[in-house]
Every structure is written in structure tokens, then in C-alpha cells.
Length: 66
Image (cartoon, rainbow, N blue to C red; front, side):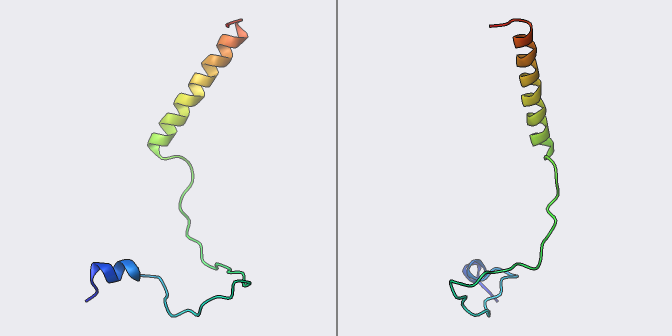
């Protein structure tokens, strides 16, 4: 049974049987996982707040503010 240290050194899904690459070789990754798009709920709230503040600043400037 692998110990936590063994798992840290060789995490599942990592292939350790591959040969060392030549430094002049270009590595091409042929597998991609979709990670989602858009903001998380907290980030969306923060983005909406920033947008609102900027809109208020634009309105203030348009009305002849400082």
C-alpha cells in the first residue's frame, strides 16, 4: 500500500514510465479537460460591484464632478 509520501511523489494519473525528453523537443498535449467558463458566484458579485462603482464614477464625471 502506498504511503502519503509515495502518493505525493507519484500522484495517480502521472506516468513515470516515459523517457526523458530532449530539451529541443516540443511537447504536444493531446488531452484537454473542460474546466468551465464564467465567474464563480463570489467573483460575479465582485465583478458586478466593480462595474457599478465604475458606472457611478462615469456618471459623476459626466455631471461635472471633480
